[in-house]
Image (cartoon, rainbow, N blue to C red; front, side, top):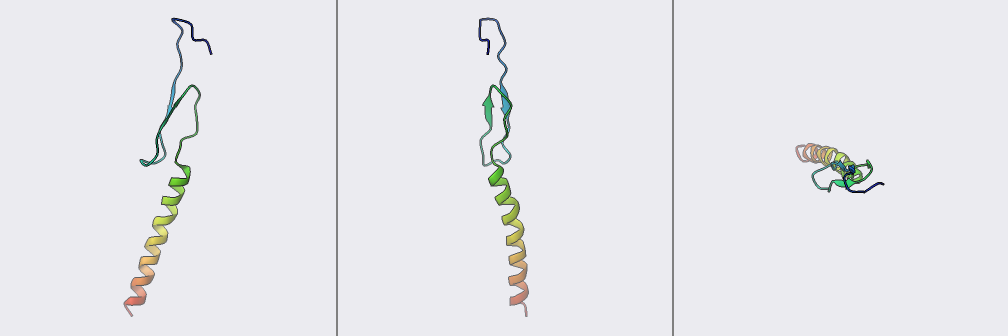
Length: 61
């Protein structure tokens, strides 16, 4: 990378996938952080909803 005076330096910002992770600033484009957090949220919420429906159905008998 050429960093002489007057030469531009390219910076890339990558936004996080969720609000619970940090973004990244670097000299090259990068993959965003938070993939495991996004997968956890995307699977945990539907499982909890289905579990709540099943428990409500069993208790409603």
